[in-house]
Image (tube, rainbow, N blue to C red; front, top):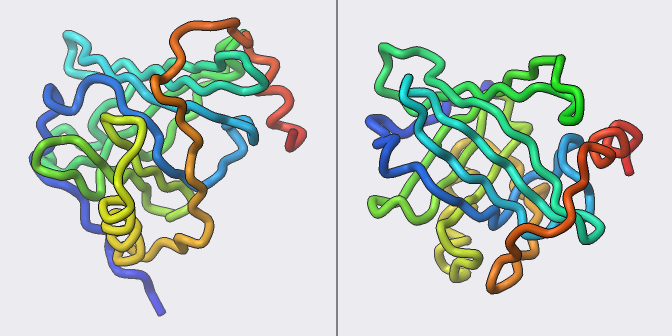
Length: 182
């Protein structure tokens, strides 16, 4: 059976979307350390309308980060279908990697968001706070099911309260380890 076309938010207010988001849950992926905790993304609007992306996580007690740029996949569309470009490896950024970042659902106050993409291999639930209540979490999981996601793969991300700031930086060794499934 063919999966239905995903519904994507229309008219996303990028300025309102900017700031820090904490990862509540996600599908595990090869580009993130397996022992990741306190994962978060910080978005900053650039003058040219693109978005500076700073993804951070803590692995083995060290802060791991990668920076990139997000931009509308189709500047003429009001759909929240973005592309995100990172350069790898982080310590010698030469290989551009571009992925889809689709805003599937967001509450009216821009407090919790469901992010996915066309292949349904990646899924994130992000929040402005480090934790959300179980009812809200289940509501977003149900939205993912409605969009054709296999939510059995969803993994809750441990978040400290208050979240850590700074700390020793891993300059990219994590990325090499991730290639070997560590």
